[in-house]
Amino acid sequence: MTKIQMTTPLVEMDGDEMTRVLWDWIKQILILPYVDLKTEYYDLGLSNREATADRVTVDAANAIKRHGVGVKCATITPNAQRVSEYNLSQMWKSPNGTIRAILDGTVFRAPILVQGITPYVPTWTQPITIARHAYGDIYKDVEAYVPQGGNAKLVVQDRDGAREIEIFDFSKTGGVVMGMHNTDGSIASFARSCFNYALDVRQDVWFAAKDTISKTYDHRFKDIFAQIYADEYAERFGAAGIEYFYTLIDDAVARVVKSNGGMIWACKNYDGDVMSDMVATAFGSLAMMTSVLVSPDGKYEYEAAHGTVTRHYYKYRDGGTTSTNPIATIFAWSGALRKRGELDDNAQLRAFADRLEQATLRTVEQGDMTGDLACIFRSDVPARKLETRAFLQAIATRL
Ligand code: NAP
Ligand code: MG
Image (tube, rainbow, N blue to C red; front, side, top):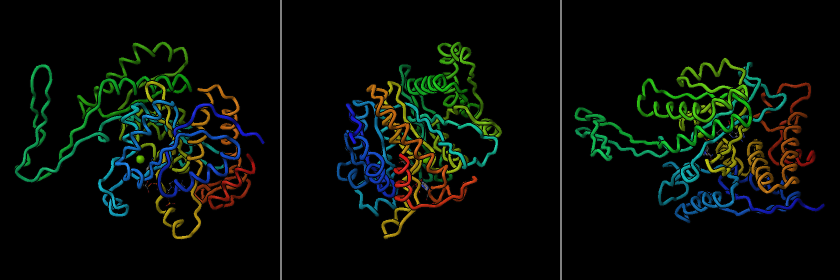
């Protein structure tokens, strides 16, 4: 069989633990037999981040800027325990945080719906896409512990001079402070990404923050969204029969649960982190959530929304077999290959991405799946729980 050719490389970012194992198997079993894969490879595994003083993460992000499309494996964000486990010289920052800071943009997360897996919320008949602002707030903050007797002030230097705002007087007790920021430019491109995506898929946009409490910070987000919507999008939304509205984050949570889904829920960085895990789990499994970072200048980075599945990895490393779900990682690859196909006008590559996704969904619908899905599968056909490699082989058979 002649393999499908590629003209431009994908930026391939390898990662850690169980997802690093899945990464290799997916390539060997589902991609390399059919595609003459061209990638520019970056090893973002924690050992190589240590060896390169995290230079490799910055290089990978810049490569996405050059080539336009990347696909990323899940990676460890080190904490104190990882520093000793991997003998690290520093607690390196989250690679996703670094890449998002370089590319800016918005992360769109949507669940993969498959017959037989019903959402925990029975009214959710359509997918809910979380649009997560990928820049700033606590992901780019500075923090300090202030011992008792200290005092913390915010100093803002601008063209009118310096302003000092007291944060807290710690004279009676020690405590913690944090300084965070966002920029008008990044908030504006977040708004435009959401509105453009909504016009593409013809879905409403809900945006929620906490402007009643955060009267300057969150209010700025609300105002920028409102202004850009009124100036640039209101008419087109009207013509497309879709709407935009703003509400408070707690109200949005209540309304989403009672909705039928089918909307884009724009969230600030932290809200999007939290809500996307809730939405993914409620749609069936954390392992069924796709994630794509879209930068304002149209660069794409595809990944799975879940982590490196550490618990499964330790079992695998100790010689056991695991039933880890590879679907979100497969969809990261298919998403990236399809986008590459679109940009390079490569119809064969686009068709391959479609077939790979169809074969994956059909495998589950016909009863072959991993353990996380087998225990929630409801259908006329019985569910067979397969270990990961056998599941990948079952997909390859249909592909
Ligand atoms: P996780 O890797 O997403 O796993 C949490 C639990 O969810 C797993 O123990 C497993 O439950 C279930 N799960 C997640 N993905 C699954 C899959 N594909 N198939 C089957 N079950 C799945 O999150 P974590 O344990 O909090 O984090 C582990 C590491 O991943 C951390 O070092 C963290 O820094 C990193 N992380 C990376 C990213 C990223 O790169 N995008 C995102 C999040 C976390 P059971 O154990 O009950 O089977
Ligand atoms: Mg998260």
